[in-house]
Length: 413
Image 1 (cartoon, rainbow, N blue to C red):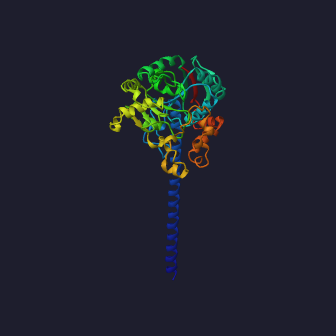
Image 2: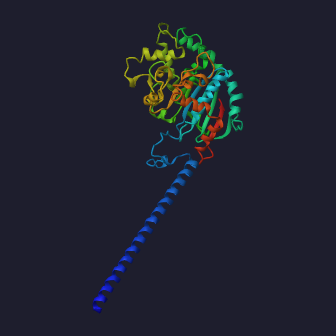
Image 3: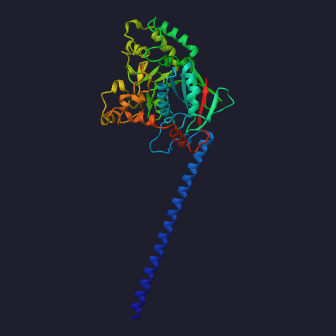
């Protein structure tokens, strides 16, 4: 009997010992897993800190250094760090409504600048617009601007998430020459630059005359300006502008929203613009209705030269669908649900306002204020129209919280 008790006690003691050893092993494994998690977290934190410091000091991003790594599941389209994104406007006259429109589209452009490349905004102005811009608009928007070593450059001291340059070109001295060129190239059909729009509507056709070379944002090197995204003041941008440049072929003269009637949002290939004018010279404009004025020159090429060519060989091609939405063509799609199905992805909207009435379209346009269209078409315009500049500036500044060196500056070319 004692032997049975001893055997039972020994068996129980062995079981207790095995249980203790198992528990100890489990505890050790848990500690090892905890250590692994801590180490992985520290490595990730160090990598993130390194990537931010690298970006701040050298102007490169983590994805530039480690191209297979991205901070986001949705990879944001980026351009090469030295490949600036260029945007252009043409401004004529000093009407308050016209400049109110300009401020709305400018807000949308600034807040949709590329994330990892600088952006330059080229603004061609006549004398009246130049005076309005430099003496009223810029001082109001950037009251803390200070001069730099360059007499033509000011820093606004407005931090932004990427370097942005706003360059103003006063082209008043070119207008007589451009009127003569327009008259001669069209055999006298176009004798005036002033029609239901303003002379600024024609500036895009002569941009290659004044925007040919420009400084990098650091002012250490010059580079040729290749492609410029022109937009009217009644456009609102809703997505990263780097996408337009990434998607576009580099061989076309223009990249339009559609193949007919609308060049108010167009990617212009500046080195090809002399060829553009040579094509115009070959067309007999007297046989055309010419009811669309500045846009008739583009239409003439589309309808006389490009019409029978394969799409890939046309001088003027189309934007991708997210960037191809405008009122003149798409006005029947008014209900929000229909609009969202028609354009599930949106890059920009062209509202086709303007004409002889200089009142800001964003304050009275039916597709912005109409009860049916407002919840769809009006979303973009109303957001940027009603967004105060102080909020917009903070939005742009906060996106670049890790780099205090990127900001907006002003240049008078």
